[in-house]
Image: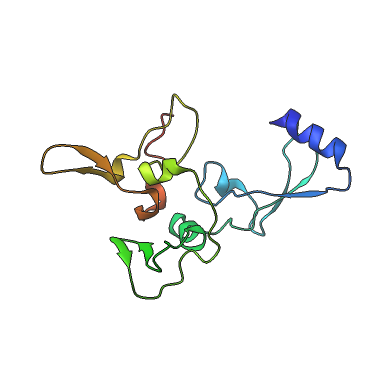
Length: 146
């Protein structure tokens, strides 16, 4: 990633800052400045990292980005709801793995559906609720091997 940033900044020398989606609850997010602006760490190409969502919680990310369904109903806790909520007004596309219970995506060998979203059916079949139904920040990375 360092090399990719180096190449990008070499091609775009006017860029002095880059927006980053780090949140306070992310690994190392607690070490970032309170104002949401940090210069890159030593050994990295020099630019300002801007953290516009640093104080957001997991559910807030989904509340803003989750697309509304075509029927006019909205996804929410417990399934589809017909009442108006401020959910998904940006309609940001996202990886389909989030619909399969993945809440934190890493490598192909260390990422699994989140056990906090596990559902066992009456027939014993295991499935997973979608990522946007997770409510606890501290459970976001339970599907990752560390």
